[in-house]
Image (cartoon, rainbow, N blue to C red; front, side):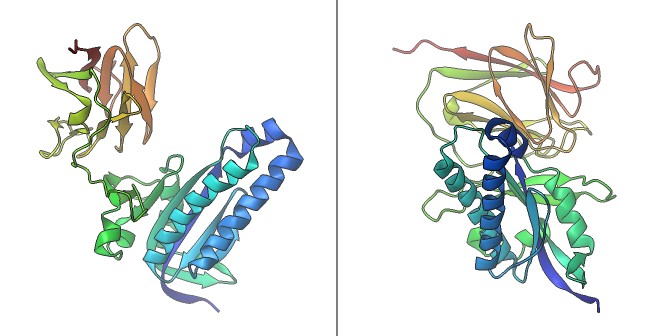
Length: 304
């Protein structure tokens, strides 16, 4: 008999299994994959969740409480890191994508259906490697501290849904790690590298200590770009590991064309390192004459 109730739905999907089979062969790769999915299942149960079904290289689970599902998602990421560290194979690491949605579901014959299931499955398509994405309905039911561990990615258009969905991404869950916010100060090793951005003939220069630089349609953005194809919080430029990186967080994507390079780098919820100089198209490729574009240049200044 079918029963209806509110639950948090979790989808988890492993990436990199194909290259693992190519590198290690069927026997060893299958052992690692099976062990990994088994560990993910144990994590679900440790947080009082229930595995509905395994899906090849992943699984679907349900939880009574959103906070339990969020903790499970974080523990899953930690488990993947431990498994690959113990494997000592030299193969490409497995990556895990996790998506959570909350709402009414219907349970029929040990399976689950409903809008929350559909939303979680579609949201998983937007998750990058080692990312945890949650809907606004999940985020709203977390504690105040736990909500601060996520940053908003604006509204995403999910496949098959007319209305966009407000989405948040996990930044950190460790209690001893500083909680990052969208407009917080970011400090790193001092560097002589600088970033110059040019929009509409206006130049602005940023040091690593002045990142993140937020690009978007929102007046709160570092650079506000008024264009319908640009999301409110479209992209961020951050300083990591001695380089500036562009991180797309939009619905329509970001497009990077480096000087003297014929190919355009397409970012859809992805990241790339900026080097030299070039042009960034927000929401459309730089070739589009109506695209909202800004030019960038990475340069060094002389230090004493």
